[in-house]
Image (cartoon, rainbow, N blue to C red):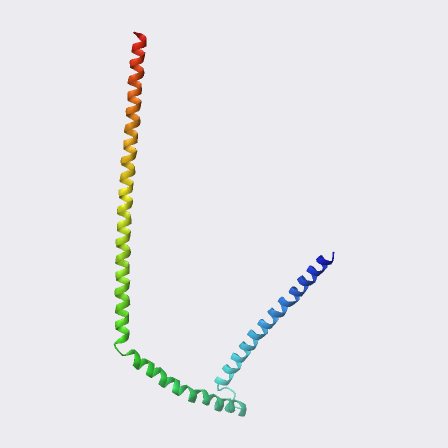
Length: 152
């Protein structure tokens, strides 16, 4: 009896924890959406108040921070202009072609082996059928001969 009450208490705790998690996740999503709304309102110049101008001044700092990032992007683009990247691309392409060719050759070899195995199986089946037919023929000949002997 004590065990069942303990299980029900654990189940009740889990039921309490799950809505809390859902509430926290929904509140975080709503706060992120409200922050995006506030950023949109600060971007739109419809309300020319002192707070919006202050917000615009605050917006100038990230743009200044963006300038070295832009320079870094240009430097990265300059690195891409070297001959290393096309060589790597061609090497990868050649490797892919070689792998595809080997896979095709392996598949062709496997198909040939399967065809040879099928031919061998067909030959074995034909031999077995011929042996069975000859046994049946010999048996019928023997039975007919024995019948003839018996009839005679």
